[in-house]
Figure 1 (cartoon, one colour):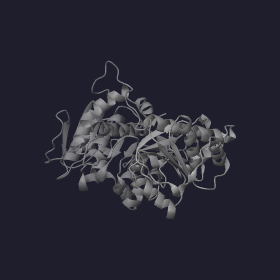
Figure 2 (cartoon, rainbow, N blue to C red; figure 1 turned 135 degrees about the horizontal axis):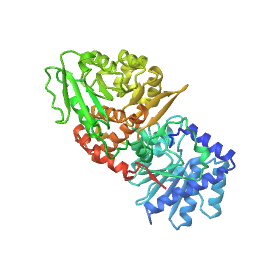
Figure 3 (cartoon, helix red, strand yellow; figure 1 turned 180 degrees about the horizontal axis):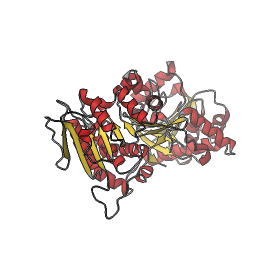
Figure 4 (cartoon, rainbow, N blue to C red; figure 1 turned 90 degrees about the vertical axis):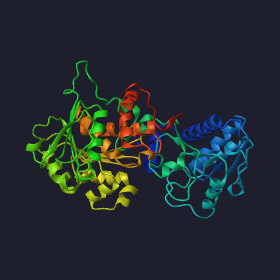
Length: 486
């Protein structure tokens, strides 16, 4: 499943038409899906359908016709100047003696449901004048709003704040990325009959779905033992940051590692899980880690100024490694990329800015492009750019492959969450997954565990404790995507 932009959706529409699927049928199917959702979710309620000039408005005109035919009380308000398919749908509505009124005449009525079919996707500038005033009136009303494809005005301010959004054919960036996602409310994905070939665009970012992630789960044989399911080395810790490697170790344990060893500076007191093996280091060196048995590592959590020697000591092992926190320095990441050691980096926007010599705000504003740039800058390294949502990237052939996480929530905004994620990915690497698969599955399970707890006040160790249950639910096929299907 892929994440579309408005431009790529227009290309998909054109491809469908080129394959012989009439655009008028797409509009008819879209409007009917909107009407069915309104009737299902708000039975017996009067409806006001607000229609713009373009295809989004045409979808609204179709919805109004189907609502009327189903016996709903409908008022229709439309902008002037419809053309093409939308003009045909307006004539079809008028044939049923339902005449649209000018948009400026609309005033909210108590108990009414508003269908927002003003703009949808593809807006290239902020709304002003009468359009902005109309959006303000919609938001000021106490009426629930059903947006057609996308709340009007996004991705700019002002925009409609919807109760629910009927997404047509495929999810777009605004449905996943904050703060836009908050304006969409409940997200319902409706198939509108588009030929599958028109939606097959494998160069677009992958959306992590429960089915695809369940297929990646490492399987255990009946004779499994702690040495056969993956051993993890955690390297980090410094002064006041002893909790970070402990949380990474906990994440690795709960993600299924058979054995977790923690290397840290001698003299530190780490409250590690009882099951962890301790390796205090007088100083970081390849010799100090030579006796640690591990198939994967995570390094940098709370390592402070010792991140460089710790990372170089781990690099000497030539095992797949997660680089996090203080190990996310350009020189360290470059050394792993040059060595050809499989590596996963897990920066938040601030750390990504340090790697790219950029600003955290610009990274957060364009996470897909930032992840792409990181994958190009550090060729061969798998990128996990943490955020809302997390974006993953890797260089593949002459291009960059992208994926977007679909789990996680704002309750996870607390210290230590990233340390747990590093341990989770390291455990999956140790179990034999390739970096791209370990990163995608790790991000998905980490976010799913947060979703299953999902309350402000959630602590990192709470999330780690939920990992086995989240994994079991995914394996049993009990996990559903955050969006609904129609």
